[in-house]
Length: 349
Image 1: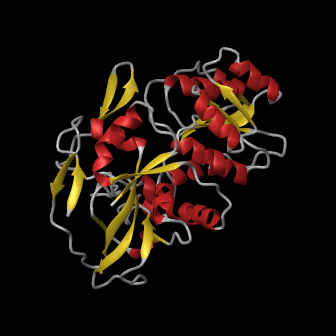
Image 2: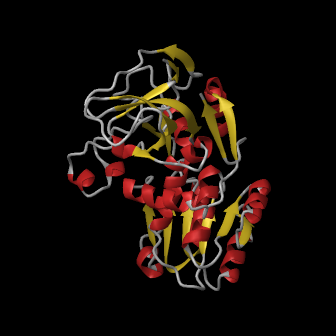
Image 3: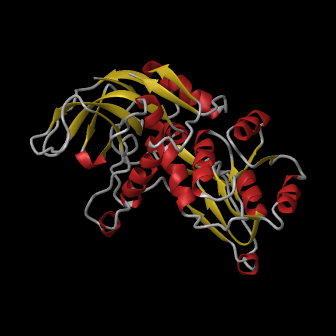
C-alpha cells in the first residue's frame, strides 16, 4: 500500500510503499476512502509542541520512521480477522481512533482516549494517510450514513474534540452565554454543537474578520475580534459580567488570556487548542474569582456515539470542507501552519 509518511521530522512527507497489513484476531482492514488533516498532525510532523518560553515538548522519542499520520479516517471494510464480528466486507464506516490498552482502569471506565499506553491510529499506530488502515476491533467502527464519508471523517477528531470539550461545561442557565474562542476547523465545529447543546446562541471570538463573518453566518449570537483592545470590555458589558464558560480552541498565550478574562466569577475555561505557549495568573485570583481552568482531549467512544446521533439526525450543520488528493497531504500541513485553511481539508484516496 502507498502511504504519505513522515521520513524526517520537519521535512516534507514522502510517498512510501509499505506491506498491506493482514488482519488477525478481531482486527478489520479498511480501504481508506477519506482522511481529514488535523492541526495536531502539524505538531507531530514538526516533532514537537511549543511549551512557551523557548521550551519544546519533544514527540520524536520512541517513534520509528516512517510514520503514517491521519486519525480522521473513513473507509470500506475489505478484510476481516478470524474473530472479527458484527461487520461485513463492503460496509463503510468512520473510525474512532483514540484507542487505549483496554486493560487499565482508565480504559475500563470508558475513557480510552486518556489511556497512559495509547494506541491511537495516526498518532501511535499507522493511520489514514495511506491506502489501508488496520482497526483492532469492530467496536471502533461507526456508521456514518447518510453522511458522505468526506463530511463524516472530521467528526472523529475535529467534531469529537469540540463535542467533548463542550460536554465538560455543564448546564448554563437560559440567560448565560458560552463563548467559542478561535474559529478554525475545530472552533467552527464547537460553534455548531454549542448551538444545539445550550439554550442561548454562543458568542464567538477570533482575530480574523473572515472567520468572524463565517461564524456570524453560521449562527453565532455575537462576534468579537479578540485583537481589539476593547473586545473584553464589550463581552463583559454584553453578558452583564462575563460568560458562563469560554472554550479556547486555539491554545495560544493570547487566546487563553482572552478566554480567561471574559468568564464571569465562578465560570469555566476549557482549553482545547495546542498552538503553544505559557500561561500564568496570580494564585489568589483562582479562589477570588472562583474560576476553573481545565483541559479537554478529544472524547470517549460513548461521547462519539452521542455526537454522531446528533449529526445523523441533521441537527448539526457541517463546517466548510474541501477535498484534496492524498498526495497533497504535505502541502495541506503547510497551509495549516500558515492559517490558510478555513474549515477542514479531507484527503480523498
